[in-house]
Image (cartoon, rainbow, N blue to C red; front, side, top):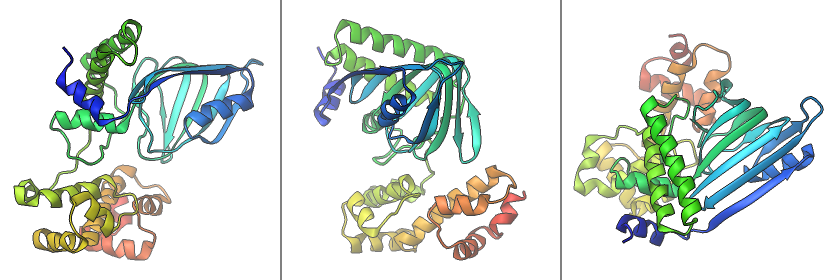
Length: 327
């Protein structure tokens, strides 16, 4: 008998089988094929030791796919955030990811999570790379069944080494996924079960980062307001309008404004600005004193006018951004 949870997941989404392969021996074709898969920007490829060839395969469905990328040569470029959650590791060659000017070399056989919500540079050479793609909505639904998150997006810190026991569970999940594909294929119940198990291990390996929401939002009467607040935390780096919050909460624009005033004594956009300032503050504490950091971080969190940003920051934290950097 099929698991009711698996049946409910299947009922919520249109799930399509995925199976494809691209390969070749030309650098321009590699940029076209691999860059096309990842909506790549500024990609380039070159031969290594006079040799160049590549092969990329994927199998699964639109919620989870197991992939392998191999290359003799080098490829680099930019990947935009916002796509699937991608867990990846290399078993040969080299790979490096650069985010916000900080470089993260990939260690062999150590899974990492590609940055999910911001662009990053990568460079890979003479590599054998494995990847597992998880659809965002699928992961969110699995997380929701565990009672770990609300209805809005998840945030992850991918640059952390999984604990040994989690790594063993991850290998077990991969084995179960591969076996499910061999035994029943991507439309079988055993595959659906293996997908959910793999997503659960993924969430244990890279626990979602949650924002501490005010306790008052746990009150039943504030459930709709909580949805709006969760939306702000999940999309704080994006353009957020009162209409977006209205849609997220299922309330009229006026009701959203009144709810924020009643509970927080500020307007929704003021609350958004406070959340953004908190994110900037956290990043500045971690960034260290290097030139240009304040402006880059502020702009990333939606502050276009640096003068007004600096004044708001000082009002909230009692010091100017550059003072935080010097700590």
